[in-house]
Image (cartoon, rainbow, N blue to C red):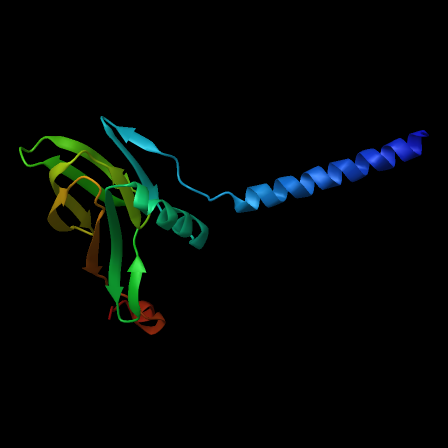
Length: 158
């Protein structure tokens, strides 16, 4: 085989491998990194449709799913950077973290927990029971204030 035939064959093989890698990469869900705090493993994120879809596919694997949204005149909008504090009913902290997107998935042992979250100074609390083979999904919804272009121009808000 001459050198140009070898180069052509090598190029063809390289292109096939590159295309295969692109297909494999596109099929891999884009999950945020798994975090650990004490005995609790958790994922947080969901910014962007790909990561949001990947997290929704993982929800069934976690006993606790938290969702964060703001209510606007146009409907609900996902929120990010939400401080999350989870304690047991004796006040011991199990998780103190920030959700970097509208979803936080947490692996907690069975038990009763108090969840405290806040957005723009407004705090909400929920008590949840995590039981064997169950999945608790809790939505935290805050009213949000939206501004229009004309309102921003004169400094007022709607």
